[in-house]
Length: 354
Image (cartoon, rainbow, N blue to C red; front, side, top):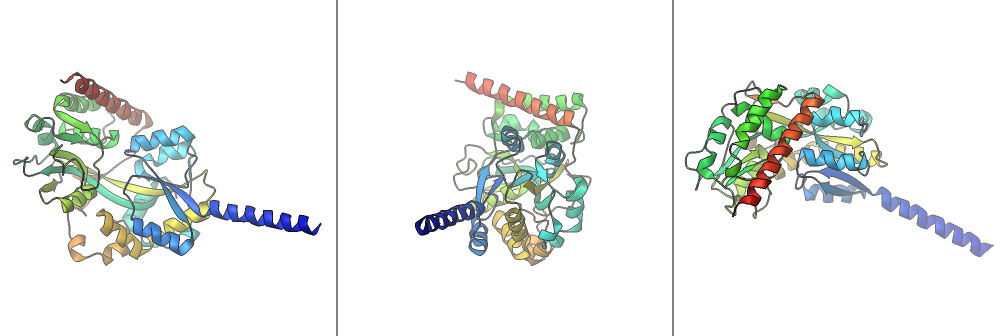
């Protein structure tokens, strides 16, 4: 009997220990290289909770991953603000608990307002814009607008990269074609797509930019690319031959959100991690490490003055720099379908080349 009791308590202890191990890990669905490893290590050291990352390389790729599991398998999903209504409709997200996010008031009011347009789902993480990154060794007369970017493609044939996301690429082509970047007119979207299609033979790739010394700009496989401003400044620091411009005919600003998965069984740990990232000194470290603009006003005030005054990094929102808007689901699907057709046509062209 005594042996049985010892066995029972030992077994129970093992089960509790196993449960504790499972509870000490949360899963974050995010872009690659979009968080500081030093902060992940600090969070684990402080709390005993590890953060496992699963990566995607575009908003469209994230949608596919979430669709595969119906939103299950993740505790925190890092997503763009404009995808929130779609994810809410699918019931993939849970609203956050403000009482567990004591550092939320550090977020600047305008970003809080933008984040809360769809309810308490989005905790602002980073924001930024889209522009043109180029190697000045090869691009001696760089484009100054999206219109000239597409028009000059024959000059850099085979050395051009476009970002691999429908809601990034097509809006910039809409601007180049003289339309609003948030147009839901399919004829206008088709004209923007035609602008890209006419240059397919000159385009090297549709892909995200790797943020390391072996990136394709450094290796001179490409000379010019669409780029997010934070990525551009990070890569520019690795290579002084790179320059970045914000096109004169306009661009979009995006806001990325930390969201809590409805299917998560680790919501307390998820809140704890998000609150940790919102702590001003941690948000400041993130902004310095990744060179993206922070929506955390207290953290912003801790940044060096040269960073605060960098207009490439912190442009003013205006008629020329519009915050991304949510578009109708039918238009969203049309963007994605049109983008897929462009990529398929490009692949067919590439396979036909000698």
